[in-house]
Amino acid sequence: MSEHIPADQPLVLGAFQFDSRLFLGTGKYATYPQMRDALDISGCECVTVAVRRIPQDEVPGERFLDYLDLDRYTILPNTAGCFDAESALRTARLAREMLDTDLIKLEVLGDQKTLLPEPVDTLHATEVLVKEGFTVLVYTSDDVMQAKRLQEAGATAVMPAGSPIGSGQGILNPLNLRLIIEQATVPIIVDAGVGQASDVAIAMELGADGVLMNTAVAAAQDPLRMARAVNMACKAGRDSFLAGRMDKRMCAMPSSPEKGVIGAGA
Amino acid sequence: MHNQTKLAAKMPAVEESHPTSGESVRINGKNQPWRPDWTVSDLLKELDATGPGVAVERNLEVVRRQNLANTVIQPGDALEVVRLVGGG
Image (cartoon, rainbow over all chains, first blue to last red; front, side, top):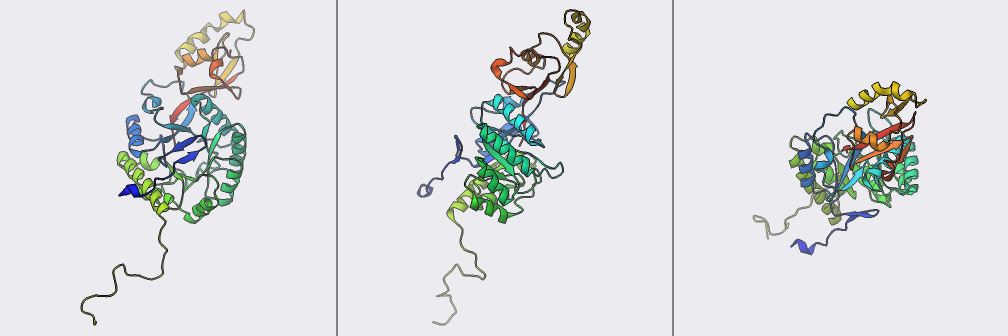
C-alpha cells in the first residue's frame, strides 16, 4: 500500500544530497565498535567529526578512522570547542585539508557553561567561510533574527539548537523553531538538545529539514536501541509533517457515527 | 618524545655549524628545541601521524599535503598538528 504514498524529496545541502534526514555525531560512545554500530543502525548518511591536536604522548591503540566507513558516510567536520571566529576559521581550513571537503559545521561558542553560540563571531565566520567556498552549516541558538542573518550571509543550512548542547532537554521553544522554519530560505537542521526519539519526531513535525544529534544516542543506556528509535522517529516525524496534521479543536468531536446508537428512540 | 629527547641532547654539536640552534619551535602549544633541516613530514613521522585524517598549520597557514615534505620548519615557527576525533 505504501507505494501509493509519493516518495520524499532528498535533503539537498550544496553539492550533497541525503535520503536520511538524521545526522549523527561520533563522540562519547563507550567504544569505537559501538559508535560504528550506532551509526549503522541509525540509518544516517552524514556524520559529524571534530578536529583536535594530536597528543604527543598518546598510547597506541585503536584508531577512530578505522571505525568510520568513509565510503559510506559523508563526513561533516565541526569547529566545536572554538570560542572565537579566528580559531573556528583555522579549524575549518584544517578540516578541509584533511578531508578534501568543503562541508563544515560551524560552531562559534560564547559561553563555557551553556555552550550557547556567540552570535557576532558566528555571523562573521559564516561570511568568511562562504567567501572561501565552504558549504557552511551553521550552529545557532533558536533566535529567529539571527537565523535570518545567517541564511542571508550565505549559509547552506542553519542549525538552531533545540536546547543547550548535550543537555537532552528537547525542543524548549517550538514556537521559535517554527518561526525560523517558516521564514527559512535554506534547510533548517535542528542541532543540539535532542534527548530522546520523541524530540526528533517533534522537530521533524515542526517542519525541520533534518536533525543532528550525538549525546542522546551515545549516552543512552542502550545506544544501539536508541539509534534504531531515532532512525524511526526521524522518518515518522517527517511523514507526519508531510501528511499535514488536522486542525485543533476546543471541544470533542466523536469519531463514531452519532446516529443509530442502541437504546435510543427512533 | 623519546626521539626528541635524544636529539635535544645532541644539540651542542650542531650549534657550531648552525648559529640559530638553541632556538625553539612551538608544536601544539608546547615549546620544543628547533633542529636544522627538519621538515613537517619529519615531524609527522615522529608523531606517528602519517596517513589520512591529519593536517598541519604553520604560522596560521595550512600546509598543503603536497608541501609537507618540502616545508622546512624554521626557528620560532608555531605549528598545530591535528587529526579527526569523535565529536558532535
